[in-house]
Image (tube, rainbow, N blue to C red):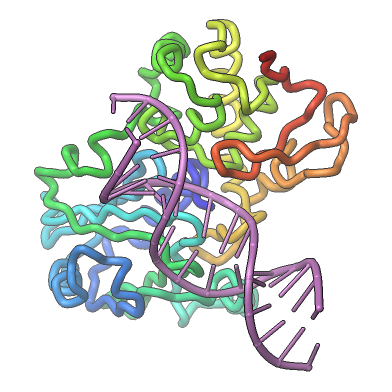
Length: 294
DNA sequence: GTCCTTTCCTGACAGC
DNA sequence: TGCTGTCAGGAAAGGA
């Protein structure tokens, strides 16, 4: 699941490997990925364009496309949802290790492929085909439906614990549901929500309005600890996520609670439980994450 | 406006 | 063995 650390890793790697390359053609095997555009309209929009640069907002990739290096003509607004990840391939330079990584089952569901003029390509693997690729006019990108309601990025330097406290005070939802709500905070998904709440010692079912400013400050610090650490580890690959070369990130090796059901808590030794919060599987230490009192 | 439910899709897995 | 049914979930859409 590409969350902030995974999308950040992809954006950085794309700037290194794909920036400056010109798209000769895009091959689309799953037409629904580019809805509302038709396959022809999408192909016409990207054909001949050069990748000028890649940014991240929340879990979205923003790929600037243009004919000259100056002003983009289109922004490719790309969301990978559950199982999507791009793979950069240069078959002339691939080692046997590279080829074995690309042969991994997680990397073999190619739904779309950007072919560059120099013979390299960017494949997009997405088992469940939930991903979306929208072509947006650069002048309208900030008012695009997917971005206009988006809350502050979880790593936005101007965002503070006090602002988060204010946003949470008026809501009634469980804190884990709020962490996953991209209009409250952008970039967090199920893996890092569980890791953050464990680090902050908060129970996922706590209603947000019951959090004190001290609770929110602790959670804010956890966000600013866990996410950068996961960026440095190049993400988590317990599920489908792989990097541009088809390889896994290392945060799964140092995670504290996600997918550790039945195993002992690293802090208190109690058995990690799995509960359901807002319809999503959730990992919690019943002893050291404070349980909401009725 | 917030909150809740449904939809999309495939692979993994349980049960018979 | 081979079939059938269930489950997982990010975000958007539609309804309360």
